[in-house]
Amino acid sequence: GELHLIYGWSTITMRVYGVSSGGTQHKYEAPYTMQHDAPCIQFKLSDLAIQHLQQQHQQQQQQQQLQQIQLQLQQPGTNINGCANGNSVVEPPQFGASVAPIALHTMFHLLTHAVPFLVLASGQDVDEAAEADAGFLYDSCEGGTGVCEEIFGRFP
Image (cartoon, rainbow, N blue to C red; front, side, top):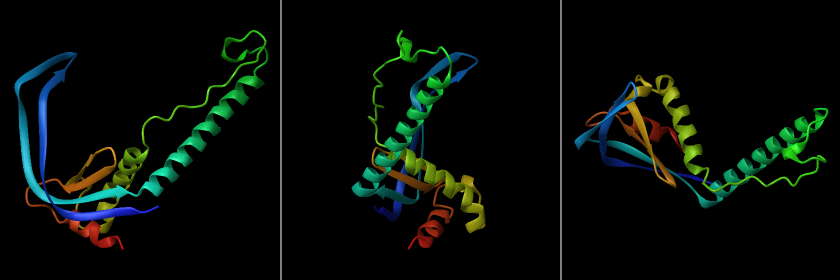
């Protein structure tokens, strides 16, 4: 699979619809909107990469489920899933959502923690956003900090 990167400029818009404090919620009449233009990198996984990640995720989930069942079977007198005779049908794990956003989010955490080692900047100089099949890393202030440009330049 492949990871595709596109570097460009974007208008970043953030909206705050209210606040919550001490269990009390306050909703604004109109959302508070903040906006800035900054460099941005789009990260998009190929279909083959997403398929591979999904398969790896399923295998890990199945291994964890098998380990849990084995632990339950080792407990004396324990019945699995409430069956009196200990026999039960194990339901296969459900995988509805794509793992692509999770993988991209994890990668962004790694990148933002590596920023101080790559450039003279803080991990707070970049931020992230995600969609169903793509993730975005963008400079966190108007006009940019140069971090996205530097990160993009380090990918072959």
